[in-house]
Amino acid sequence: MSNYDKIYIGKRAEKLGFVRDTLEKVYRLADILEYLNTNPLLKESLALKGGTAINLTIFNLPRLSVDIDPDYLKADSKEEMLKNREIINSTVTRYMLSQGYTQSPKTKTHHSLNSWVYEYINTGGNKDIIKLEINYA
Image 1 (cartoon, rainbow, N blue to C red):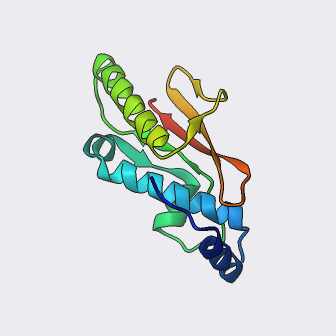
Image 2: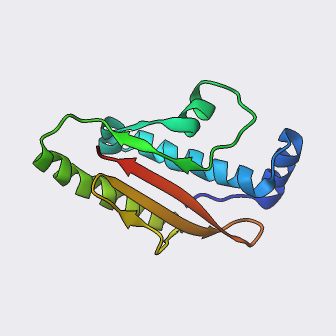
């Protein structure tokens, strides 16, 4: 499980002009993205999109993204996609729980979208959330 240091994050946030809790969330998102990129199945199956992708890979924008929205990449049959979806979902869930996150009741599964909301207590002692949505359409 990752260790987030309140003093370090606070100093970095002050230097960069961000709110500490938001910067902590970005550090957490970066750790989750690193896992998604090092797990062979997830790395080959998912592509990051949206503001998080732009902010973390292309531009140095003064905006912090606070969610992760990858798309399923493979051009599988419906049956194969559903099989992979189950494996991906259980892999993501196991990882998040192993990192100390709690799955919120706000988590939802739709026809082509898994929308997870994970709760955690940040370094300031406040409850916060991380959103992760995988689009299978």
